Every structure is written in structure tokens, then in C-alpha cells.
Length: 322
Ligand SMILES: Nc1nc2c(ncn2[C@@H]2O[C@H](COP(=O)(O)OP(=O)(O)OP(=O)(O)O)[C@@H](O)[C@H]2O)c(=O)[nH]1
Ligand SMILES: [Mg+2]
Image (cartoon, rainbow, N blue to C red; front, side, top):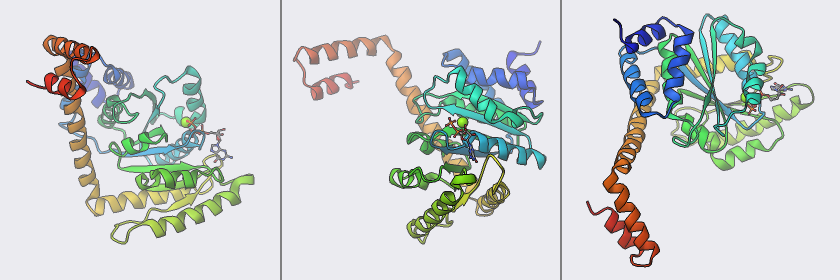
């Protein structure tokens, strides 16, 4: 009889959506048995890695990220790709309402055979992205998707964290909201490979074009000469399709550059190492704190500190003496 693992491996490799969904659910679980199953599954699947391009779409709430994904996703599908979308909610408690909103924004895409859309909860580790997000990306890749679009709300940490997961970060801003300057302040732009000023239509079209000019001027001035590539800003309208062809072209050029310079492999290798280190440290902490001996040592040391018998440095020395 086949093991559960090999049934799952086969199911995912054959692109079966139910199996893929099940595997993502397991990957998002914090149960130890599920985590070790996921590691085994990914170990097996990684023997024949997929070839997907991983793209993050980040930006402030309401910037039009989902609408943009709906639009770009359809373009990729028109070109023959299969597209997986993972949406991550930083609050981790995605309400039924906002899942529905995402699905509505991605209405056309969600109805397409070659698309797979999956909302994913987030966790504290990796700044809003959960270890499950990385696993979900790899699972979609193993299931044969060519493009993986990950939507994260830009709340400071998450766009930094998402860089550790993708090849390309697209930052979506809204004209006239001051996000351009906010972005600069927070250094968010440093983490973007392409900046889009969305809603370049109707009443906000000229504002969007102005914002793009300001952004490009700032990017030119602030990019050190030794940098290999100048990040550019483009206007677009995710809703009516204006500028979307140009955005697709810019994405194509970016991936061409990434391949040609060898940066894609370098980036992925650094990401694997970063993941290894973060997970290793997390596991060490987890396993260490599970020990009954350590638990009772910590309780007693903290109590002695509370009673005024140890200062915090003495307490640390005591707690770490083994
Ligand atoms: N005028 C205009 N409105 C847009 C455009 N793109 C999105 N919108 C509108 O902006 C609102 C937010 O769009 P979403 O795509 O849900 O934005 P989001 O960034 O995914 O939002 P969150 O996931 O809630 O952070 C919706 O009412 C959209 O219809 C656009 O290109 N032009
Ligand atoms: Mg959204």
C-alpha cells in the first residue's frame, strides 16, 4: 500500500488542486506532527524543483493589489502560464469578509482554469509571513504553477520579509496619498524591484503621473552608482488596464536581467540560507524550552529575581549556566 506521503507527492506533482489545498493546510498547521510531515513532503518534492517565477505584490491597504493581481494574472494566463495566488493577511485573522473581497477583486482570475487562489494566514515569525507561506509557495511550484503571485499588505515588516521569499517585489502605491514619501521614510522602496502608482485613471490620472515623475527623480538620485539596476516607477490602472502591458514588459525585463546577471540563483541561495538559519534558531529555542528541566529552572530563577534575590544579570547567568 502506498504511504500517505507518496500519495500526496503524486497528487501534487499531477497538479491535483484538492491535494495541493490539503498540503497547504497541513503546512500552515502548527502541530508538530504536521510540521514534520510538511518537511518530509517538501524534502521529497524538492528533489524535482519547479520553475515558477515568484512575485510579491505589496503596498498599503486599498492600493489595488488584488485588482492588479487579477489583471496581471489574466495576462500571464493569456501567455500560457498557470498562475497561483497566495494572499496574506498581516492580522492573521482574516475575516470571511475580506477573503470574499479578495475573491471579488480577483473575480475573473478566480474563474479561470489555470488559476489557483489561496488566502493564507500569517504569523509573527518572519515579520508577518508564516513558515507556511514559504511552504505554500514551494507546494504551488511543485504542482506545476509557472507564476506565483503573493499579496501582502505593506505594514513595514512584511515587505522586508516577503523579499526573502520571492524573486521580484512589486510595490503598489496610490497617487496623492503621501505613500510615496511614507515609502521613502520607511525605506520600503529599497525593497521594491518595481514601483507602480495605481489608479492612474479618471480624476487621479494626473496625480498618478506626477507621483511617478517625483518617484523616478528620487529613485535616480538615491540609487548609488555602484547599484546594478535602477528601480523605476510606472503609472497604471489595475481597474481599466491602462499601463498594464507596460507593467508586464517591465516584469519580463526584470526577470531577463535577473537571469542574465545570475542574481536569481544568488538570491535564491541567500534566501535558502536565511530560511535555514531562522528556522534552525527557532527550532533550537522551541526544543530547548520544551525540556522540563529548563522549564523549572526558568521558573525558579525568575521567582528569585522577582523576590529580589537575583538581579537580571545574575538571573541570566544562572539560567544559562549549562
Ligand atoms: N479608480 C481605480 N480604482 C481602483 C483601481 N484598482 C483598484 N481600485 C479600487 O480600489 C479599491 C481597493 O482595491 P483592492 O484591489 O481591493 O486593493 P488591495 O490593495 O488589494 O486592498 P487590501 O487587500 O484590502 O489591502 C477597490 O474599491 C478597487 O475597486 C484602479 O486602477 N483605479
Ligand atoms: Mg487585497
